[in-house]
Image 1 (cartoon, rainbow, N blue to C red):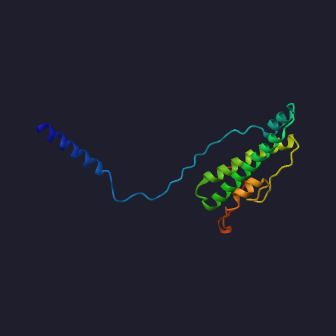
Image 2: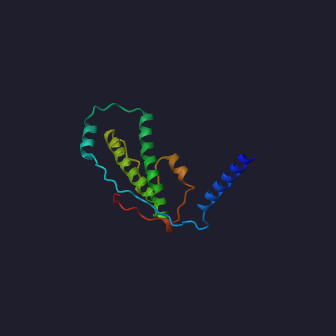
Image 3: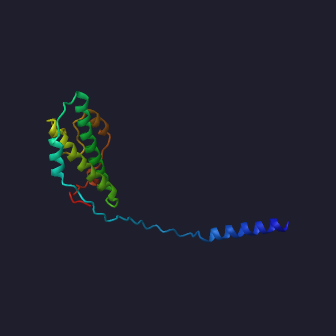
Length: 155
């Protein structure tokens, strides 16, 4: 009996201590922390020159289509995240993803140039050459009042 009474008292004390940490006022302030990181960027011209100096193998139709799809997918990623950043500029992750997509698009441009494939990239945001990408983005409509052009500053 005495043992169970002690256990019940310990249980009640534990509940009371847990409840003491709960308060009715919650902190509603959102804090966004963006760390400052410096990343050494390799010389893009040297990398491109080294890539273009490699022996070139012919591409089949599937490989060519895959390269074009890769470029369109990066453009879709860029356009979508640029538009989301325009609507939610307090969330820098959208800007970072859009900027990264631009880097990948530039890398894809080197491949397109090497194999003399016409670049399908349309500079107009949300407009695509690939029929599948164009069809999949038709229902997406971002009102002009929410669009903000992305600046080419690096962050």
